[in-house]
Length: 353
Image (tube, rainbow, N blue to C red; front, side):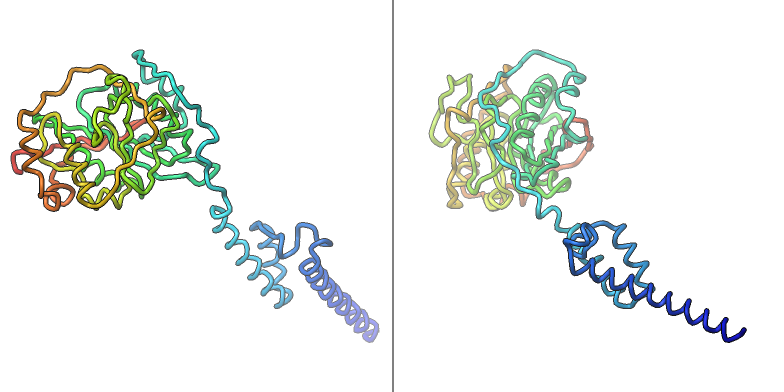
């Protein structure tokens, strides 16, 4: 009787051993013959579930443990390389061309309907492809909320169609001094880099509304003057060295010229000084074609012109290395992430300059 029991025990053990060996051979067969294994081969395993199954089997066969490690490593590699396989965005797929500028006043709720794709803070990035550029839009600002709404309604859809990753920053001068456009631009450059790794910067007056979405807001190598043709001036360039309204820089080029001068209070001449900085640093200004670089200027009460602006322009000559980004001083009053833009409210600290 004991012999029979022993014989049965040996038979069961033998069957169990054959079953384990057979399972292992089957696994190897799946691993090395993808056409037979369908979606279970090492080459085609790309889900955590498959990895877990093989890990469980690895307790039976040491070789399967090595297989599990191989699969897990391959899965991790595939996961990290997914972004690399995603295509780059194409610049012209969704562009319209000439656009109508709607200057009719409206409520913020209407903007919510038209620009629901925008994330808090005025941020957007394509989800189906790699963005062509990472752009910060810098707006020097004071008390122009109706213009700002029209500006946002026009610009957000344009930047989305251009397939950029971007964020809009409104740099609000919150003191009682004369408006200092150049210094606000410098602050916008410094502060925006705290929100993202932007490589392109568009310094944009809020009263200039683009009329064509082919005017691209992603940087090339050279500094660019974007607002070439403005309706107020009959869509003609006023003079060859004009560099005001809307200008665009790479991060490296803006640092090279040391940004804007901080000394121009009141309206005018800071853009002429910026052009001189470009020229002195051996950079070449570029302009998009005049037929697409068209803008509507919203009507507003002009800022007081500085009687000393031309004297400031003469005095600023030769001070490019000591007046600009490297001499910037200001105080942050508040930072606010609105739905369609980020406001950074600042005191320009004129008294202590």
